[in-house]
Image (cartoon, rainbow, N blue to C red; front, side, top):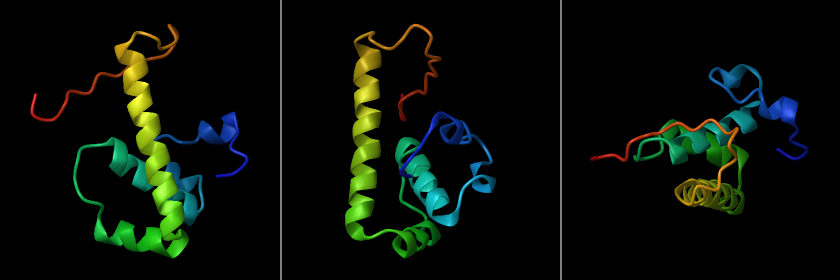
Length: 95
């Protein structure tokens, strides 16, 4: 998503499928999988991802999302998130 701006980022809400092309939707669906409940990637999504991305691109995408998610948790744990940032508490599975 080269050239991502605030207006485009604002379209990443429920129903984002209508606002983005198939490649972008596949990336967003993978992101949903990575930040959601643990589990395997749906085989149909895996197939769509392979149609749109190389192995290297998928690795970069997954590492980028994983690093962002991990760092955001560290910032919140340390109390360094902006005061204006809305926080949603999602319980850890099994807790």
